[in-house]
Length: 114
Image: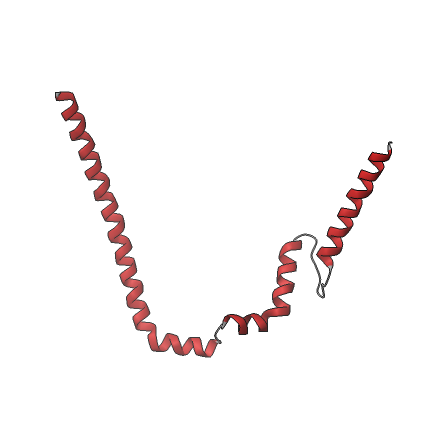
């Protein structure tokens, strides 16, 4: 083994050790080796949940329930309108496809007459 190979192996081992140290640094909970990323994210969210709620202005459940009671019918009407618009969009797309097919057929018949 040459000196370059030895230095390369040492460098690879140091990089692996650094990555392991960086990954487990600051952990207070249990990191699962089967799903390391998900468990790390779960731990982060557990530690910072209250701060995230405050930072992003997330509302509490009673306030959400009150909002649903006050505006539930309007939301349902909007959802129904959205469903109707989606149905209209699909019907419109089908009609457009049929019209394009008819136009292609007319263009082909016109080209064949020339």
